[in-house]
Length: 308
Image (cartoon, rainbow, N blue to C red; front, side, top):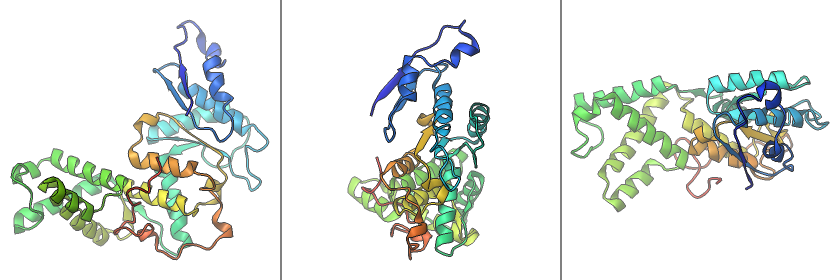
């Protein structure tokens, strides 16, 4: 993968000079189609400006809009506020009417893909489980374990006092989401715990089983952000994508360092040849989207099958 390093411009160049590409930025703007590249530079070196120019120039091409009216370029970022700011910059730079949002979050794209896959299979679109809702479910489960004496067998260092802390719930939720992104199911956690002598991993696996049952009871079609991205990745690999995603020929990402493993896997799936093939010419999968990959309740991709 080619890497282009951008250097800081002198402080007195002004806004007009910042819009003129230097040789490093030209290397990005003239990248051949179907090439992947990482643009590396310190803050203020023009990475987002270069991204904006790249999107504007690609959209200005005759094939910048597909025959059925979808943009061939999409900009992604990890945070909603960043996506809003990037949309404003792109709107000022792009000199043509473009259908849909010019920039969006990875989760927004993932939701569109999963909702489309659900519709193909006659199922309701999922709802995104917020971080606050997740924390409340985790807290209720942990409190219930203390009241009735049930729940996982947590090893001695993870005492009841530790489990009462908000920091523990945050750490537990982070482990759970990272496991989803890595395709590690509760049975895998228990197996790894026995192999490595890590009883806390077995406890987490047992907790995940109970957590998933509670989420299903709370709202059957709910997915957290990690599960949403994992389902979207599986749908892209099955070519079950909406026409607007099938039309994409270039996806650019601002602040890629902020992405987590599952989001990077989704980008890898989008980059695969024919991964975005329009599904309108093929029958929908007979498998329900909630078990799309054949693994566990949520159908997260199996280990070893993730795009890298």
